[in-house]
Image (cartoon, rainbow, N blue to C red; front, side, top):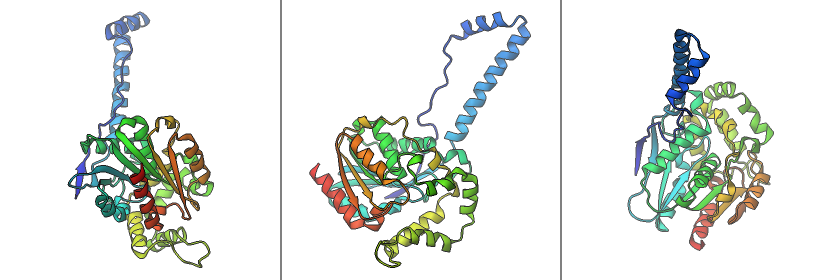
Length: 327
């Protein structure tokens, strides 16, 4: 079942607090300002600064409208699926029925600015924090009482890691596919366009579909097989559709991704880390370091690139279901 979920902007909202009582504050400031008029003007200035700060926060965190999601009726252990940039929840379609047949209840969503979810014209909305807040609210809106399984690819993997670290009791098992951990993890050539997101967004907006097709095709070539793509015809078409309908401002997201506040030691639940050995977007050495930092991590590598679940769907599907069956 697919529906459009209207997500309010206020999710996890830091509160602006004053550390001293207002009366005590007044007494202190009156001592500094000998004239009542000067004191009143100063107080009004402080209030304007706080109000401006509040308005700026609302501008950024209330910039999204509805999120497009897909849910499942019936019973089963919930499985939440998060895609990366610039994909959509349709990348999980090949996994959907197999998860249901195995006794699971899958849920997926188009990230803000992707697929059929709402797009924003404000570049400041395309950053880790506001997007994470929307996904956090989406998860809360599902009203899932039991611990669930969380699966994420690339930036979706980053969101999954962050959610799990902040809510470890809510996640029974965590599955990561080529997770995008931090901006510095990107290879130098792939980082360069994101240092100038305004220019890159403008180029993306006017890029012809044939050029997008060329980039997707080049990134999916099989090693040792001349000009042979690892993507099926349907997956190639799906990826092209994802690239064309996402907001051009998604190019602002990568530079905001960081793991400085993530405590990986909190990921004590079973973790399944899958990655393509030929990932040309992210440094695979970071995946190995991540596996060493996780207390209960099982690793599965594939002779693939950044999208092993799309190029090697059968192998990834089998590995995930086997992991879920055994753990």
